Length: 284
Image 1 (spheres, one colour):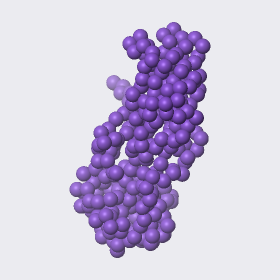
Image 2 (cartoon, helix red, strand yellow):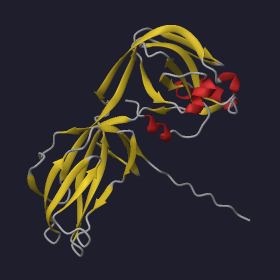
Image 3 (cartoon, one colour):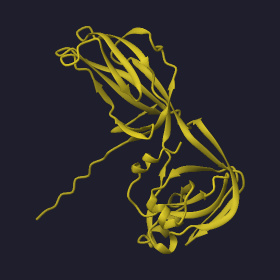
Image 4 (cartoon, one colour):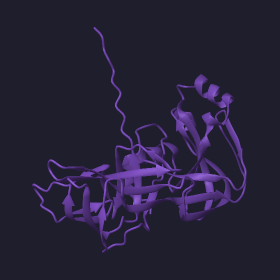
């Protein structure tokens, strides 16, 4: 389930971790597979729902302290399942399943100030991360994610603490992925489809969606466009996040197209990725 290739999504850091990606699952839509329908600009063609891949809840409280960070975490608290690169495993001396608590900087102004005072020893985000080293549903070690200094990178043993796991649960943000007929191009009779991600009803920007299926990674970009000059209608998009959609007839002048869903979105681990570019100006 963890799909090891997703480790490459981790950013290079010290004792770094990254959230376990969510899961995309097909969802019922207005149109059923095998059904031919006519669509206009703005119409939703396919729907998918976003699920939490793994939900982890403490069954007992934990009190932890490393360096000058301390926290009492009550029973019932949810921890975030994360992935860790081999470098983090080497630095902490741990292996197994990793689950992390909240950002210590965000907990209080004192913690934020403390990180500032010791900025050379910690990243800007510091979290207590717990380890189930033998997959027995009990946490038995803890380390500081975000520690730069070797003095604070090694894991420490804790009394075995029970927790429970649930898989493929609805996310708290009512996450949804849709494939929409975006626009027509009358000059070329092309059609542009658009993938959209919504959370709590608000559209989220992303550069591409990273997915893993059968231990293989793929990147899917939001805009998908037909090319009738090269691939005359009827033509088929064979893999849009695992979905297959055929364009049987297109009349860009009228702004309509006859479509057929051959296959819905595939259930798979997925992660919307936003790429930002920073320009640095150097003056001589």
